[in-house]
Length: 86
Image (tube, rainbow, N blue to C red; front, side, top):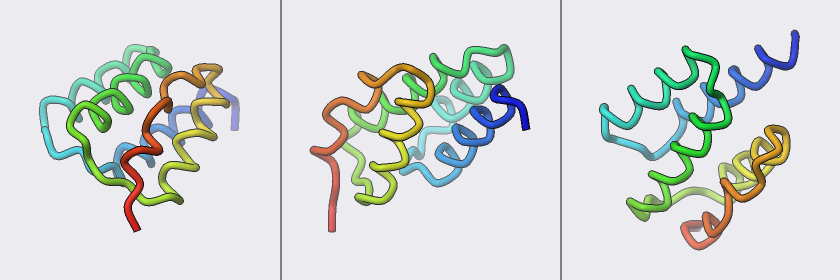
């Protein structure tokens, strides 16, 4: 699988498992991915998780951090550790 497809698959899976409930935000993230803006899509998803103070598991957080590193956007996952529950 080429890197582009790999990154899209990572973000899609994280989006599916995300605590986001706003259909508008989810649609925005999907739209950004559909036009090749994976980094922006990922950053948008992380920003909304943080802005809405949505609880995440430590395993989900680790996957966000790993994806941020893969994308070269480590700041995307900044402060999300504050939302870890359980």
